[in-house]
Length: 366
Image 1: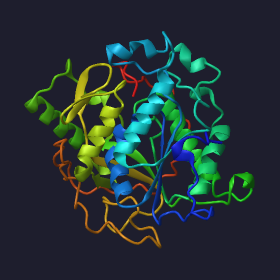
Image 2: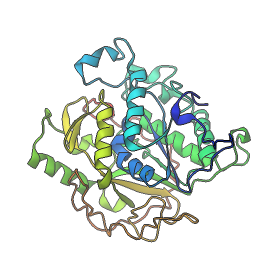
Image 3: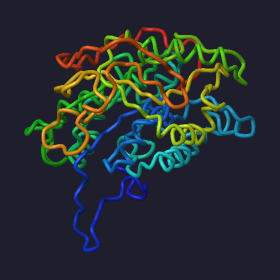
Image 4: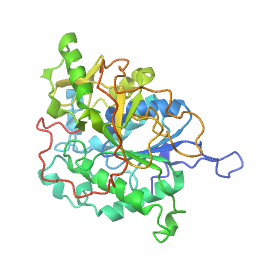
């Protein structure tokens, strides 16, 4: 399925050649393009990697349609050399090295699915565009990864993909479908033994954290063309919808370095960054999630995505934040209100996202 030459796809083996046992805690993240993982989950990934958990990233496209920020790399753009995808593979590898993540793969193998571009563009209709992929066919590639790694936790986007990009919406559909198919004994036993993922989370950002981040941005100033707006941030939700808060402050430096590694797509200025639109937004190192499948830990919001999973030694979620008032190390996102409830009863299977919802109006592809 995957490119066997990719370091993230090499099997774990003992010196004798037999498979090495995986760590007790295993988390899988599914993203649309290189850089999405770092913007959304970079601190979380660095935290769990540093703690010894097995962190697997599956990226669905190479991000070929991204807009290039550095003028000296403009020749890579899809309307010129169309060489951005392979270049971003290198950026992703560098970012993962900064986060300490060694298992990073591309869905179906490197280049199997192409970046679809922003919603409504002609690129959506390319035969190889991820947006046009059959969700069940694409999900089978992810089922193979799930049955190999056997993660307890899956992280992906909400049904709108956070902000309406077709590849983000499709990544949600594929991830949720794979989570349904992986435990089915009758589905593709050639892909491995069935496995049930205990907890599924969607990325999100509580409104009060976003507001606090913008307040700091206004007070501190920045080097970009102007400030972004709340509408430019993906996955903004009301505070009560947040069920997990991961304090990534100790890993702020790693996340910032990983974002800098995605230099064609991201410009970083201290605790702020901008995409190709040159609009400043906060660089959040406290990361937030919604539990949509599985049983939450003993306290909500959880501080550990593995909280409440039977047989997992280590963090139990009891030593975390009482509410959503944790301040990130560099993003300054202050109090975000009281404790959230849990929506674990949500089935999370609604793949029929509103594909007609406008994508981010700034034109910057994340």
